[in-house]
Image (cartoon, rainbow, N blue to C red; front, side, top):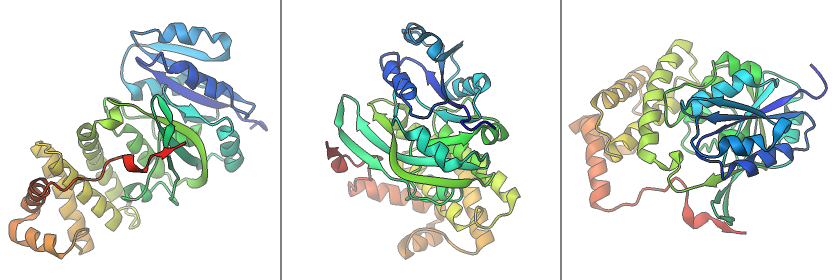
Length: 329
C-alpha cells in the first residue's frame, strides 16, 4: 500500500443538481492529497450531467438508469479505485480536513472504521445548526442503543475490503439502508476509531427521505427481522442479547405509534421479541405498569393501549431533531 492510499468519495445524485456543486467542491477542497470524487447520476431528469461535466477530469462521472440510492452507491463502488471509501449524499458537505483526520486515525488499516462528529444545519439557514457528537465504542451492539446517534453516512470512512465483504448496500429499500449497512459492517467486528471533531455537514431539508418517519420505521423493522436471524446464528451474547431485545421492543412500539397496519411485519417482530424474552429470561424495557398490562392483555394489546393513551392525553413524542436545541451561529 502506498504512503497516501487513494480515497474514493462516492456521490449519488438524483434531482439535486442545485446542491451538487457545493458537495463536489467540498471533496475537491480536501487537504488529504489523494482523493477522487465519483459522481453517480442515478438517471436524474435535471441538470446533474451538465453540472458534473463542468468539472471535467477533476471528477469521475458515471450515469446509470434510476434505481435508488443503494443501487447508485453500488455502482459507485464498482467504478471507484480507492482503497478507502466514503459515501456522500449530493446535498451534504465535508469539512476540508475530514479525510486527513480519518486517514491519520486508520493508519492504513483495513480492519477499522473511522467516524467523526456531524453538524446538521437547516437548508437556507446555515446559521441554525445542531452538532451531533458521537458517543459509541463499536458499531454492534451500539447501533441497537436508543441513545446512540450514529450520524449521517458521510461521518464514516470505510476500508474497501469491509464494504466488499458485506456486498455493498441492500437494494430495493427506500429508508434505513444506511443503518442496515452499518450493522452488516459491524458483524465483521471492525475497530471503531471515533473522532468528536465536526468532520461533515448534513443539510436538513423538508421532504427528505429521513423526514418520512413512517417510511423509516417500516423499512427498518423489515431489516431488523433479517438481522435478528443473522445474529441468532452468530451466537454472541453481546450482540444477541438484552440490547437487541430492547431495540426490537422500541421498533414494535414505533410501528404501533405510527399506526402501521402490516400484520405480517408486526407478527414477525413480536415473534422475535418473545424469542429473546424466553432465551434471556427477562421482559426487556418498560416499567412495572406496562408489564402488568402485558400480562393481563398480552404484549400486542398492551402496546396498542399505550399508543391510544398517548394520543388521548396528547403526549407529544420526541422529535427526531429537537428544534428547540438548534443553535444560532
